[in-house]
Length: 92
Image (cartoon, rainbow, N blue to C red; front, top):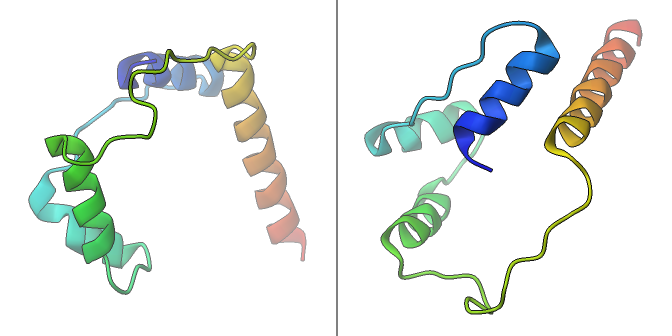
């Protein structure tokens, strides 16, 4: 799945436009800190490693496995769970 395909699925399920935007590398540290991360450097190094190709998943040459759950089904479940969690947090 591409980020654009995921955005299209979210837009369909949410009934509103969803767009995908890259997050500039120079903003990662402040963004991660704003999300509550105290020391974002290891995460930044990990992302750089994947992006630059010096970190790879084990079994690189193993063929990928495909799931049986459609993207829309998985996203719908996530949205429903999030909506339920919000409802619970506003009533307690």
